[in-house]
Length: 104
Length: 463
Image (cartoon, rainbow over all chains, first blue to last red; front, side, top):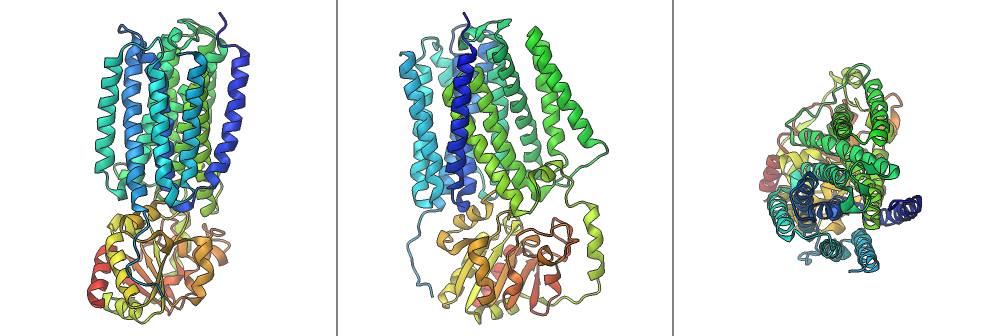
């Protein structure tokens, strides 16, 4: 079975380039004041490789691949929780403050 | 769950990630964006858990709990001033996780539907080794960046002879290894690729100095995205490809913005060695010039009698944790009816947006915090520029002295304001090693001391 044909690769490549273009425009629209939270969010979402780690950890039994998968799940989870929470902390500091004194 | 259903749910998750980034276009929409990100991640994880081949829920669940607990603990405890280190550390985790996933795919390809052990298709092998290579570089590069930011490793650029030649040779060696790996699928070669890539990651970050860190951190951010992409290609998983491309593009754009903020090409930053001894020579001829020195009371007097004040924070403010004291000072001035604003240079601090986060932490309203382009026209109408822990980003030599290493760098036009107050620990030059002629001007007053203590003293004098 040729599961990974060149067709699959070309579809992947199409998706890749379109996503790069979307990324380009979306990231330029991010306000410079929020560049640190941007790094936090991108860090968290890049840990979506947990998907691959879960697939590796999925089968029953205890082979090498499964152990690697479980380690991958732990590492990616640190990032997912850490990334989103630290971003949340940053963003909650950017809340609009009630105006106490008048600006001149 | 059917393959189509999976594809649709992954697509949904990818769209939510795009909206998560989109939300960051404004502080008010950003929190909703973060929630989109979380929802997208939850959908991705649950969808994957529904796969027929995924059976060991206990192990996976415990792994998520352990990782989640560690991540939550770290994220809740971290000081905002230590953010750059934290981000670097997180990048290293993405990198090493990518290596583990690639290794798992190599040892058990059937779990991912890419063949059997020892009989993996050529394109999968190439994608796998490229993913591994980028992941391993991200891992070691980020660890070294973390060490430099944390101060456990010297922040000074470490340069040695033939550095770039050695790096190029290692890269060629890795390409050769990948070629070997594709032909014989040997685990030994696989792990050699990992080790040599880890070595290369260290070597790439070693020559890059402290203040170039915003570029390095952004670059590693980008790499972590490309690593995820590589894994996405290996597993033919569109969600990973899309997310990886988003993150990769984001990091690349941030690197571009940061190096433009220093008027340097990304290449020259990557090659490193900036701010070493070669720049020091231009500083010598200023040694006999006179510097006007002041104390907190003088500063308080000047500030109190101004109509408008622009505060320019730099890395020195972060080091001294002076943001709260600074905000208190700003509040008193505002009560006096003085127009107080903050000016942020794109490369101030050690990561993109570093100063903005610290000021936000101190409850400075974001409307008062302005970017270089927004605030520069206002300096000529400003009475007092209050520079706290910044130096190079205010140096007029960047505009006038063609021989200066920082020539051409966009700077904040501090010299156009009527008076300049400089909080500095000593007369030492900034990161670039260039002396700042502003220090010797008649309308400049130097306030020597710790930034936090100085702000507190000014607050006392104002009261």
